[in-house]
Length: 328
Image (cartoon, rainbow, N blue to C red; front, side, top):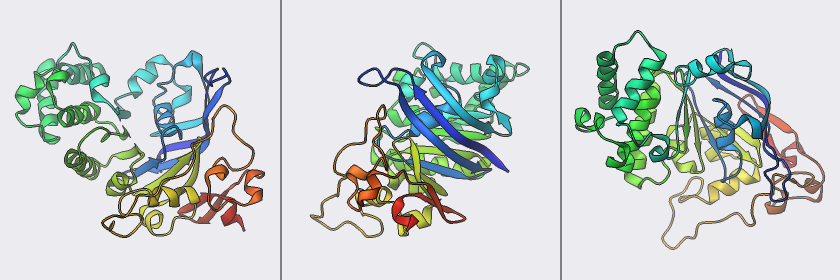
């Protein structure tokens, strides 16, 4: 049974383009996540990763956003939820680690107060003392030093890595079944990034969480993900397991992303070797070109790539690619 099931998800921001045209940020995404599985959504900025993730909690402004498709989490239809059901669902069934915890955490309350409030909101029978004891346990679990003292700290009094750990503790406070991680290692130094990634992997195994991990850093995703979904221009263009993605990627965009990371797809980076970049820029989502959206930047594009919209081709039970080159 899938913990998360997304079917034909479309997210359009009304009148958001440079010329006031609607922007289709997510265009027909299909994705499932099994219990205890970690799936990484990867791609460049603007590819639709975070928009997809936020749709699972319905965080987009209703008056400015049109959402179509089906989203089920733990068997519940998220799109059909009313305000009360949605408030109960957020944090208890699915919870999010936001990209910048300094902005996500309330600056006028201590971190401990915010965790206690979250627990008591979803579990009114829990006393303040019991909630604080659980908050302390969570701080110990995410390895925050001097946890009792840190519970009384305000967000600005913590380092970036410490805030991210506190954000993870807050996300886990109500024992969710699905954890949504929106670039949780952005702006952290390399050492802290590794610590956070190892912590997420350990928590996932210990608690049996289903995780969707959004990042543009393939190297980071490889450390934690069981499966990858590569997004470009609002669509998933390749979906496969971690081993296949690194050793045998089939979409030219996935291949280009791998060449653009230190070490490439499989070899250690040599001294003096240059990182390869993807020429050009992602297309304007308010007026997508005909055919494949990646064709203008693709070094393997054929004339028909600019005319035909590729379908999602199933290469195996675990490998799907949206590219004319694999269609034959």
